[in-house]
Image (cartoon, rainbow, N blue to C red; front, side, top):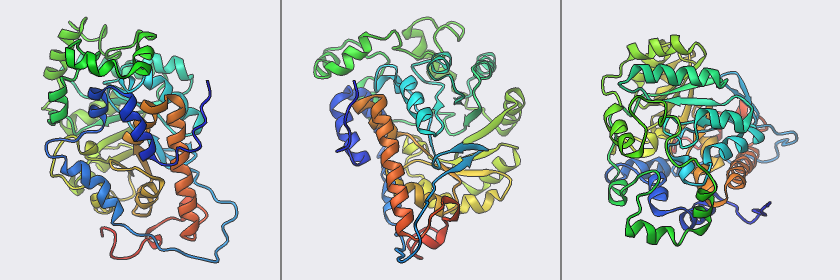
Length: 387
């Protein structure tokens, strides 16, 4: 059934509906940060400090946001970020988000910790997508994941480096986060208020981690899965691992989780095709700097050997444009599309992308630019953005 979402005009509108429709533990999972959440908040507030220069009497005919990200044509410099438990925001969530992204003309990235499997998403889209890899102690499992991504015709591997150790998110502990939710009285009372979500989940068999159950040794049920994931993230991960992963994969490689100029140089020297300036949406090191604040220094350090993208804090097309103005070749959105998915399913993801596109297009025009390739620091007010 088609939905008229024309009166949904901001990402915040989508967030409000998602909060009503998604069970508390999964909404909180998507919308929380580590510890005091200071970095989570700074990701958004630091964008708001940056101001645009309005220009007038400039020819605005024939505007275009089209560009490329690692050689792939995109309708705007935005990709859907890898997000864990996406299929718990809405039934079959990864499949629906991938379909929406593909139809709109932007890349979709599937998380290792997804509910729908690599094979599910490949069957649902029929088009190449990106796969995000977490490095586990079980190297056979890691190699198997890479091989499955190859077999599914994934066109890029996104290697996340900032989750060797899991940051603490207080809400997840308080909510007893699990997939599917445990039938506690508190959860059952909350689920009773989310009938749309429950009906969707009853109609799909995909309710746990599809990339892991049945693929990792000794993981056949939920109790063993939770202990396996807690034990498996590898604290010994190093740049040497990046080298063998790159060789095993053999395709386009993107490194996610860079927040420091020195790491940016190491990423550029690794032979990866792109790096993503990201603090994991404020979900890992609380007290770290915001992604937009460190972007210019990372761009300078990375040089011309590698594309630099930005993730964490984007809630509008204006945020995307600010990142591009400060040197990002592309951006990734997580919560912005998850709100849309939780609120309205596939149509909500499409609406989130439409909102971002319109905001970028109008803002670029009012700043006197007609092509995304011409957007740079000159569209920003000096002194309002990080040097």
